[in-house]
Image 1 (cartoon, rainbow, N blue to C red):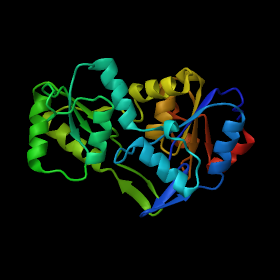
Image 2 (image 1 turned 90 degrees about the vertical axis):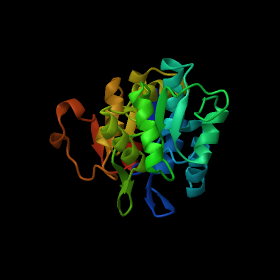
Image 3 (image 1 turned 45 degrees about the horizontal axis):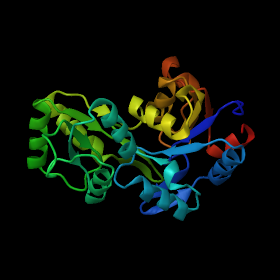
Image 4 (image 1 turned 180 degrees about the vertical axis):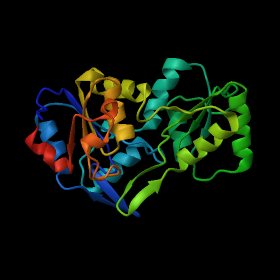
Length: 269
């Protein structure tokens, strides 16, 4: 596949650029070279992870510490795309948040009204990021807010993501699933795949979604994100999708290409 006609790139993190083993982050072979070659071509890139337990700046700093040169403004997460969703659909609303204090402060600094703040109106959305802890009283309050008309938003609804020693389960998806079951409401995903994520990526990179190449290890998140808007899609087998072959994927969900690892992209750039 030739990628010289692609105007910008979106790459996943876990299972694509890195693998995690506990607290250790290991860069995948060729990942740094791919980023450097994209930049050398003069084209912009974004790194999008569905992780929402830390701020985008914290994720970028972690990747720099592991050896990947990622700038803060290149790092996108559901904490950025939920702001796009709110700006588009509920500009005057407020949020009941499931997330740690770092996330709460990040969203507050970004101008999001949070339930409990003095100027906050009754919650119009419940946003499940990655909670550090959760109890039944919090879940019951959120369920009642949703039944009163608030929209249930989730950074991700995928059950797990790729780790070096097997799947790492998503606490956010567990909480969102509990609220969905209690209220009979399906969560609106604002991370991958979603229109909020695509709009955030397009605005950040300054290109139309159809001019992107989306590269990642998950058919249901990364490839689905690209297919929503006609982007070029490349599935990386080094992560959650494992040894999947093209003919094992329904045509409507099929990536344009499959590679064993990101290093194979170097010949296409």
